[in-house]
Each structure stands twice: as C-alpha cells, then as structure tokens.
Image 1 (tube, rainbow, N blue to C red):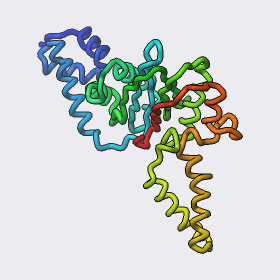
Image 2: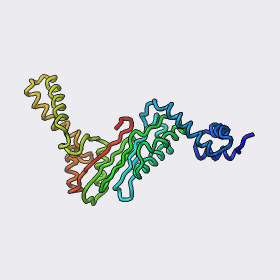
Image 3: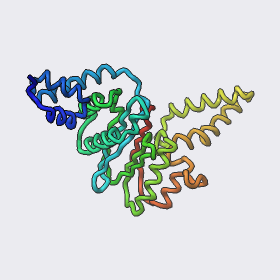
Image 4: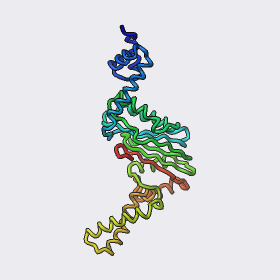
Length: 267
C-alpha cells in the first residue's frame, strides 16, 4: 500500500513541475518520503541533462538584471534547442532569475543546478552560454524585443541623460563592434586587414603598389568604421559617428567596457 496520498503527488508536481507519473514513481521509490522523492527527481533531472548535453542550442534569450543605481549588472545568455521553448514565459523567467543571481554574486557554475532542473521539466538541452557580472559607476543595458541579443555598456562620468546614453547600447546591439576605440585595435589585426584588402585590390586588377594604397584607404574607411564603436556611423543619424553623438549628449562621459550577447553565436 502506498505511503502517500494524491495530495502528495499533486504537491510534488507543483514544487518540481515534473510530470505526474514521474512524481508518482519518485514517491513509490522513496516509500512516500516527500523530500527523498524531490531528491530522486533532481537526480533524474541531472541524468536527463547529461543525455541532452550534446544537442545543439541555437535558440535562447538574453537577460540583464541591474541593482537600484545601475552600478552592478548580471548578464546571462541562456540557450535551448528550439524557438518554441525560448518563447516560453517560464524559460524567460528562468533566464531573468539567473541574471539576478549573477548580479548578486553567483557564477556560471552556481547556475548549473537551475539549468539541470529546467532540462527535467522542459525536455530540451539548456545551457548557460554566458554569464557575466559587470560593475561600474553606471551601466546602460538594452535587450532586443525578441530577446535574442543584448548589450551592456559601462560608463564613467556625469550622466545627465541616461536615455540618450542608452541609445548607444541599442546601437551596439544592432552593429556589434570589436572594440570601443581605434587605439585598442592591435597592429597585428590592422596588418592582417591590410593584407586582405591588398589581395582584394590585386584580384580587381590593380598593381601591388597601388593595391596597398587602396587597401589602407579601405581599412580606414570600411574596417575601422565597422569594428570600432566610437567610429561607427550612429544608427539614428549616420552623418555623425557614435563618438560625435556621445560628445553632444554626454560630454565627458567615457565608455570603459561593453558586452554583446547574441544567441547562437557563442558571443
């Protein structure tokens, strides 16, 4: 005779979100011991997570959690297998919960048990693809409406118009840069780009000496204006760079760090 009631099964389902039959089987195995049944379901969740770990995670969401004065932000990219799960409110809430935990000091390893529990409920591979804690005088964040990409920028200086500065985060999400300022580009990187553009010009029929001049111009006009945040044409007014826009709306404010999260890209 079972040492538990239908109410115990219902309660276990409510607390673990595991299927009803799995809750019943766990209570059977635990001889009615409720906490032991929860532990059994947790272990089964870990096994399920292990079995699904090799499956590709190309869908997911980005979540940010800020403290009261926006000086600390937890940033998480939580990935899954399908868009159907990524749009699920419970999955979105899990990503937000993880971001809050990272903001409060948890690491990516600390989040593993939450992901394992979610695998047991959702039956898809779920991975914390990225988890970062940012600190600074002020941090502006932006998450795209579909939650598949987001950007956080760390700022120093007197920020009188937070919404104007947030537009830079919006811009960086749409046009992900490699660095903030062109001084951060290594000579090795620039030399490699010049070689690529030299070969491109030679393939177009230009002599090597002319091709090198063309390559230098293209690196300055094309590569730097793509790779460097402050040199990019600003999305709301391409006649000015992001740096010029910052000089107008936030004179003296400096961007010291940024992170871009793009679901499925590993970045």
